[in-house]
Image (cartoon, helix red, strand yellow):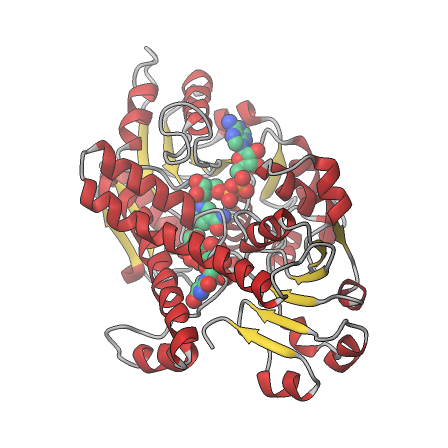
Length: 460
Ligand code: NAD
Ligand code: UDX
């Protein structure tokens, strides 16, 4: 049997940070060191001012305050942490490849491989290596072959333990997960990880499988979730043509216990770092085994999502009399969902880009996203010179300022605070007609129409 006294986690991001904080809180006798090669990120995790942690998640700063310095440490000394650990989590990013074979589809595994090589180089005692990152099925085979060919006598046991937390609810998801999934081959290694989670998760919710089922289950779970969003979004377009209301349809079908009511909220399109990347990866894997029908089936989820973002922007342009050139449009919400500062793949980026192609003046307000982030996101698309983006886009720290003199407001994230604004004040400072395009069906049509807004919502 293994005794786990020290854990190292490589990658102090949106998954590594919250996950290790919760393990440290629940297991005060295990020393956990989170390492990252990004020195700024580690400095922010160590900042005495908890408002400056690199990741915003409700409840996270309290947990960090409790465990940091006790049994939770943040460091850039990757080698030392690897060497000392009994168990090593790999939680580095696995973005879509943007070069070479599989460009735009496959997961880029260079960071994962670097970790494996570093572990192989540094380790002087036996280790359990845990895949926490989301990986293509059969990645553990590659890790094994790197770790087992070092010529040393150190033993490595590889486990797959994909993470199912969602951003914005990470702490709650970690404290009370629907299930914990652990795939592996070595019984005692699996047991060592089961015993850690069992400190706070019921054992019957800890599921053990073989390595490949575990790896593939993560991609499959995200594909199914995203598919539900694309499915309801496809119906939202039909609702807009027929007089059906997508919220009523979602409620009616969701009450069927076989369908279930969650993840049926029509929107301007799903974002986030996972759904698109993981489905593209699934499609790529299917194609690599020559399973064209399987690949085409899942690819449609992405195509539908792209269509939803595009048609939302198109509708704004068309409604504003087919030109937005020089018109001020306020975007409320830049994060890909509420309660996070993460903007990766946010629908707002694509809607803004589309409006910028038409030379609109964009004013962005988001309660948690800093201005630099908005510009980095737009620059990354490479659609126009950076200087032009800065001429056309402003970021405001005040929502009323962002909406002042605007022709239209687009609601792109479902932040609760948007519901509490003084909409009458906003209306009186806008151009007339004053349009609202609600990409989240967040606001109340009757109230806004009474105030004189022209209100459009997804699926109505
Ligand atoms: P992230 O980009 O926030 O964090 C990854 C961190 O790893 C970065 O800080 C980076 O500097 C660091 N890193 C990369 N290579 C390194 C190396 N060789 N040595 C040291 N540090 C290194 O990414 P994330 O959102 O935390 O995602 C991590 C993994 O978890 C991905 O595979 C993702 O698919 C998966 N995942 C993410 C979520 C989510 O909600 N974000 C949920 C479930 C699973
Ligand atoms: C997702 C998975 O839910 C999580 O299990 C996995 O570990 C990581 O990927 P995340 O991307 O953080 O989590 O958030 P999620 O709540 O799944 O939302 C993803 C996107 O779908 C968001 O842009 C959200 O606004 C959108 N969405 C979600 C909808 O448009 N409608 C819905 O009904 C649900």
